[in-house]
Image 1 (cartoon, rainbow, N blue to C red):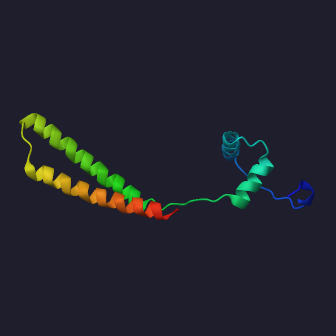
Image 2: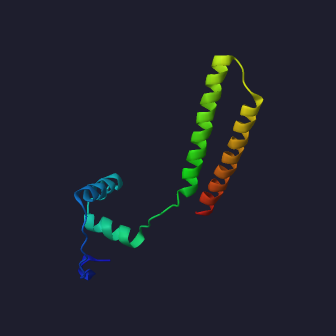
Image 3: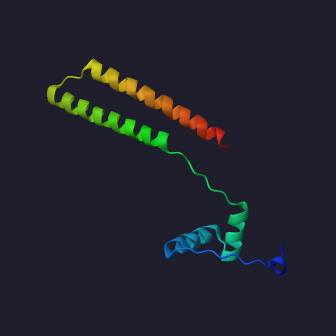
Length: 112
């Protein structure tokens, strides 16, 4: 589209931080015209908003497993013993996490 055909002006308000972020993104892409960049993003750009609830839950579960593992290692170092029940509990928790990660990866694969 030629610039002569562009007769409507659009206004955009941005904070200094947002403006700097836009300029950085433009520089990364090698674009020098703010107008061209904003026009292209408004027409062809898209925003992906992900529900991170499941990822937060996975992070929580991994943290619990990590803490438990650290406690088991500390106890093993102190007593020289590892309890089969502790290892079985940790293994079961890791299987749950593995299944949830697999589910998430399948969902991400279906997004394309």
